Every structure is written in C-alpha cells, then in structure tokens.
Image (tube, rainbow, N blue to C red; front, side, top):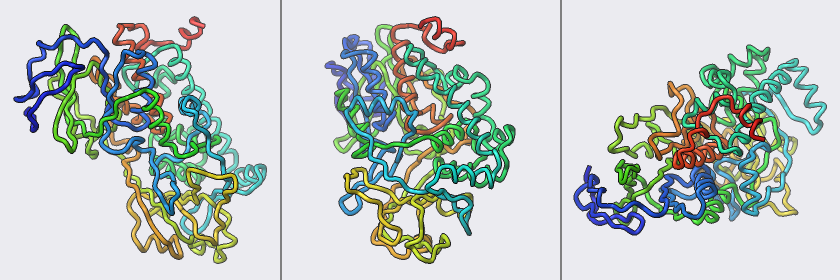
Amino acid sequence: MKFKHLGTTSAGGYSVNCSLSLSCSVSLLPYLPGLLTAVVGAGIGGSAVAHFLQQHFGPRVQIDVYEKGTVGGRLATISVNKQHYESGAASFHSLSLHMQDFVKLLGLRHRREVVGRSAIFGGEHFVLEETDWYLLNLFRLWWHYGISFLRLQMWVEEVMEKFMRIYKYQAHGYAFSGVEELLYSLGESTFVNMTQHSVAESLLQVGVTQRFIDDVVSAVLRASYGQSAAMPAFAGAMSLAGAQGSLWSVEGGNKLVCSGLLKLTKANVIHATVTSVTLHSTEGKALYQVAYENEVGNSSDFYDIVVIATPLHLDNSSSNLTFVGFHPPIDDLQGSFQPTVVSLVHGYLNSSYFGFPDPKLFPFANILTTDFPSFFCTLDNICPVNISASFRRKQPQEAAVWRVQSPKPLFRTQLKTLFRSYYSVQTAEWQAHPLYGSRPTLPRFALHDQLFYLNALEWAASSVEVMAVAAKNVALLAYNRWYQDLDKIDQKDLMHKVKTEL
C-alpha cells in the first residue's frame, strides 16, 4: 500500500522514512518511552475514552484524537435566529451515571426544564393524550390498556436493575473483550437472548397487549430509534427505560461535555480523516501506524494503543478505514445504520392537521407517532440550549422552533402539512443508530492486542450513556491488557466476586 504524500512521520520524537510505502522498516525504531494512544472520533465515545484512559494510565499517556468533522459527533447544535438548539441527542436519563459524573467534573449545569405536555398521534387522531394531572394520566392508561403499562414498567425495571451492575463492575476494574461477554455478565443468557428476539415478542410473553405495543411502545421506539417493535428486545428495553424516567440536558448544549473532556484530558485534537491502521511490532510489542489525510496532505503516526470510536459499517464513509497487516485479517464489520433527519422549522404549527382548528387551543409541546403517518416520527416545540430565568415556551398560535424527526428529508408538501407557514428550515442528517437485525452477530471490543472498537456496544443498544459505558470498558480493557491483569477481563460470576472484594 503506497502513500500519496512523500515525507516523514513522527513517532514520539523519532522519525521514520516512509517515502516509499507503509511497509517501512520498524525494527530501527527505539521503543517509545511514553504511552502513545490514538482515538478515532471525537464524539461522546472518543471524548470519554480519552478521559478514562488518562484516568487509568496517568500522565504518561499521550492522546491524539482524530476527528474529520466537529467535536461532539452526534451531540450537535443548529443556530436559529441567533439561538442554538440541539440537533443531535437532546436529553439524558436520570440514571446516566457516567454523564452525570462528567457534568459535575466539568462544572457544567443541568438546563432548566420547561414543562410541556405530550401526546401520541395515530394519523387521524390522538390515541393517547397527557394531562397536567399525574393520577388522571394513570387512569387513562388503565382505561385504554388495562395493566399493560404496569407490566411494561416491571419488565423495563428488571432489565435496568441488571444493567446497572455495569457501574459496580467498572468501579472494581473489570472489563470485557466482547459485547456478548459484557451482556452475559449482567443478565446471563437472558440479555444475550434479548438481542435475538423482538420487543413485541418479549412484551407479549409478559402479558402486554398488542394494542399497547402498537399505540405506545412503537411510538417510543420510533422517537428514539426510528424503528418498530420488531427491533431486538434489549435495545428496546433501554429505549423504553429512557421514556419512563426524568430527563435532563446540559445548559449551553450537550456537546460541551465532549469539548470539556478533551480539554480536561489535554488531548491533541487532529482534524483529519483516518484512512488506515497498519500493524507493526517492535521489541515484542504491537505498534500501530495510523495513516490520515487532511487539507495539508497525507501523513501517519505510530501508537501503542488505538481506539476506534466511530461507527464502522458498510454504509458509512468511516468504513473506508482499512486494517493492514493483521493475521488473521480483521473482518468487515457488516451491518447498516438507520438514517435519521432532524429538521428545525421556525414557523406556525398547522394545528388543524391534528384536529385543532383553533391554534390557541392546541395543548401539546411533544408529539410522538405510531406507524402512521409514516413521514415523520416526532414533532417537538423545543427550547434553546441556553434558557434564561424569564424564558417561556411559545404559545401554539405563535411562531416557534419545532424539531421534526423523520426517516427521510421532508418534502415541501409534507412541511406544508405540518406548518401553516414557516420562516426557515435547517436540517441535520445522521446515521443515528444501528439498523437492528441487519447484523447476525454481536461485535467485539478487542480487534487486536491493543486495537479496540468502542462502538461495538451500540449494536446491543444505542444511547449517549451506552457510549460512555463502552468508553470506560475499553479504557479498562486497554489498561488490564497492557499490565497483563487477565483476572480483570471476561470474568464469570462477577456479582459474587464484587461482593467478596467489598
């Protein structure tokens, strides 16, 4: 494999002549005195793993973070009328413990909550409407669906109770080399099986009615994943947990967590596209050559540890990243992602479409949908990332900023269906989540001795906190492998081990 750019590459103060090819002689390299680490991707996963790596390895670790776009990844904002609004992940669950820790560590604050009512739209009418009274909401759920919502809650709580064990395991330094090993340690074969059976299948088994699944569960899954109740049960349960707890977001924008962690870590952010990772070795240690390109040209550097913290899949440009010199070769990471389009529309809602001819009487700030209408998943009257004490949500008859989530870009006719008129439309298109069911097996975190794939975990479930959990796992895995502490990797019966360590 040839370089397009002729020159030298830096390896921790040493230069290696690579003017002819990547297969230059590495035997001449002295062993690196520092611990050089490359992280590919500066989203929440890459930012968090940089922080955790420094936390475990200490000041000797030097971290380069490669990012071809902007820091934050799928945590991003869009400016409308000089105000910034979330265009990526908008909020976090109260049980997102790593994210809570990051906010405290960085001196950030939770954004003030501006309460708004929610409803589920079925295409012709609302199938469920929230009121301002908690007991009335419970009565309506019971009246329409019996005890299905209680059975759902019990099912979700059981899953979350087991998943929360991961924080205890990580606090004791345990790590997992594959997603299946991690899931098995939390919920044994139950969690692994939940990645192979659908949400609908699992809920029907515990007595949840089909009508409740069609009306409520599907609406929540469409809002979070853009997918249906045919998706795997484990990912679905994590999504449904997020719909039940209290949610929060970061004052000033959720992406501040990423930039804050990178600044705290003193990571060297390199704005470039990584094109390949090539395996070399020196003095019995694996050494990885990371090749990248930017507006200056092509170059490369050598590292002891490499973390891929961006999705690797067939329909993503990141999949152009190639792995060279590995025996056996690193397999193609098969699978597709679910495209999601977020449109921020500044305009007047067409409340008549939802059965409210008088816009002043329209009571909802958040609208979820069942499978019909199919052209949009959610519609939210959103607040800016900076909320002053005097801020109030716009009245339904006023022009407001609405966030529309849809599987494809909205046509003008579809915008006219949802809005009487509008001043502006700005969009962000995301490869937001794995298309669950498009991959036959769960991937591994460890691709090679010190080469890791952080985003492997989102093939089990996908959220900002899941990426933070994966980041902690990869940092611990790298640390335990580096110091050959094999008793801390892929251990069985961890609940018993953790109890005996207390």
